[in-house]
Image (cartoon, rainbow, N blue to C red):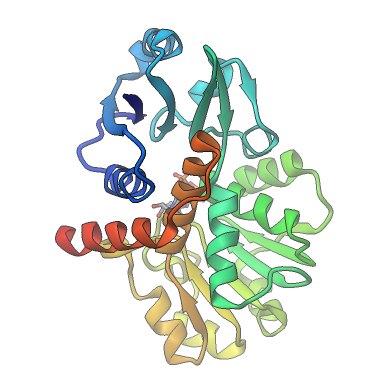
Length: 277
Ligand code: NAP
């Protein structure tokens, strides 16, 4: 039987197994999806094992290994290279090919709202791995401009330098207020539940300045008041649940070469999130 799994640590709980198991079941494919906890010191050895195991066809990678695997696998897809992190590995023979489906997941979830990122003006809060994936995805689909606001300026500068696209520019909190009325999209890609507060701004002041789609990459019980305060000022809202779903669907398609049964995966994800509450 084919084997798939998730490499990370400590992996106490993950929403990936219910989504992928539901997907395999929906298309009648005999496959398992397991949690494979591995500490950083054992990562190289574990990757060598997975390379040799014929039944293993692919796997996901999560914290803390997303960057570490970049230099330990055989090939990188352009998205993984540009984002600087791997979340999905597919095997071709014993070759491990690293990819990153977060950007595809983000864009697919955006498409479900009916909001087009093509020609849009976006503000991205944060400059970590998730922000990189969001910026990469937005640039790919033809965003007009991305303003990037992050607590640590050097990290934002590094992101901008590595994506090397003149459509991204750094902003500080005061100038964010000046551009807000021109934005179509504001994405919280920080790990803060109240990002405006973290930047010294008040949600009640910020949201009324504009009108568009507010996205929080958090989902389930990680969501704070960011989306509800946006909705109160008339913004359309989107949580990170769709991105989570569609990054998994994209991984599934890379592994199997078949269209992902997204409805079955969505139901499994919803059920897992509800039973988690
Ligand atoms: P990360 O690499 O650790 O980056 C965290 C970001 O949050 C950085 O920009 C950091 O700023 C900022 N931040 C953290 N604490 C802050 C504070 N107190 N004040 C201001 N800024 C702060 O994390 P990540 O992987 O990018 O994940 C970010 C969020 O996206 C998390 O909530 C994660 O759950 C979510 N996410 C969702 C999905 C999905 O599929 N829906 C996928 C990936 C991630 P500094 O640079 O200044 O430290």
